[in-house]
Amino acid sequence: MKFAAENSFEVKQKISEKQIAILPIGAIEAHGPHLPLETDNLLAERLSILVAKRVGAFVLPTLPYGQVWSLKNFPGSITVSNESLVNMLVDLGESLYNQGFSIFSMVNGHLGNSVALKEAARKLYERYPDLQVLYFFYPGMSEVVSSIRETPSSHNTYFHACEIETSLMLYLAPEYVDMERAICDIPVIPLSADATPTPWEEFTDTAVLGDATLATKEKGEKVISVVLDNIVQVIEEVRRGVATYKSND
Image (cartoon, rainbow, N blue to C red; front, top):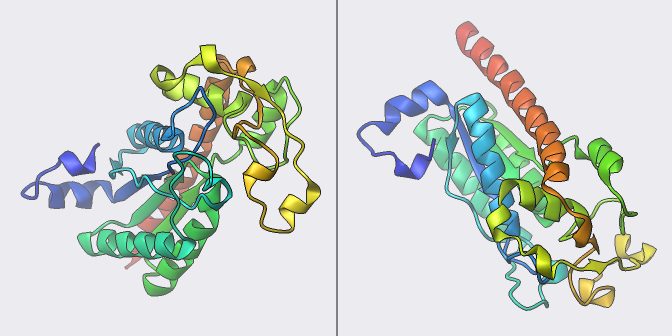
């Protein structure tokens, strides 16, 4: 359910029944010529909606800005600091807790946000230990990706505007994909990029890290199916734990 569409007279009871708030969080950044700047937001939001339908949760308005230091010099990219992002997420978590939510789940569409999400979750854990804070970034996707990928990965962690991310978009948000403009750009990413700050313009002019022309809706569906099941499994396990805690309280 869309949280922002509720009204104040009825939402209190619904919060007590649902207990779960899902926050899609993404970024505005370059994604090559075939994907929009809001790609990470679209993926996070549409995945969150699928999760919410499975677990009966509220979906919060998407947090559209993220930490995109690596791509900040590409046209269209907008970045915020980790500190700003952490503070915003902690404030949101505190507000949700005060409204009566027991589970705050962040569905992340942008790898660069991962450090901030983990730090925010830790701060909330210390302040409100009975608020269950979860953060997800495509859990369990590695194995299925290795089985469907047709080209070698440019990096063992990154996937960006490539065969994989474009496939996710073709499944979750196909109306935003222009496959006629998809390109193949497989840059050589130096080992040093994992050991020192490295702006992406040092190894790519396009912000595409792979062969986007090989993307298909079917590949995206396979990845999202696994990811969705994993997220739902974790939330359900946590919800059972919350219910047990409350029944013993």
